[in-house]
Length: 204
Image (cartoon, rainbow, N blue to C red; front, side, top):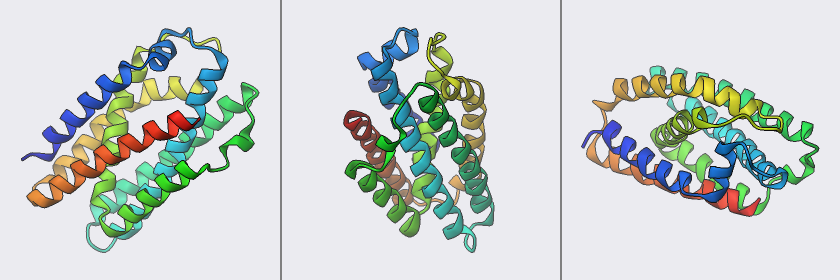
């Protein structure tokens, strides 16, 4: 069971599910309404903020056991922080109430899930990042120009195909050392994380 192949299947299934959503179709067409677009920006901010925290924790917790992976997590965490700020800036320019970003319970629950996994099995955070980097790298380049502030989408459309290639290289460098149980646990968590993001989007 190769982890990259398994994760690519998860990416394809998730992408199919996401692209089937009416809101996503409207976003990619450039014809989305302001309120629905705000919902996306809040979700983008949440996932970037939570991912940065999780990846940073995973970096700390792999520093003594896998320095290569720890450094890769650290680089990823820096990028996530910058992306969260871009989503917040787009929302602010749109006239969004940033106080609404104060963590609702579902976001807190998702954060606890990610932090716990980053503590007890940080390798699973690699699957979390792989899912979202690859889905984003395939999804956002398809977007049409929006009439609203959209730097977040533009940056991801430009950068995430490269991020996708980078995380694939990281995966290949550590994959040979993973047991079957490791692979299964990473896949299970990746799936669970993807489901949580859907719940966050539904909340907003």
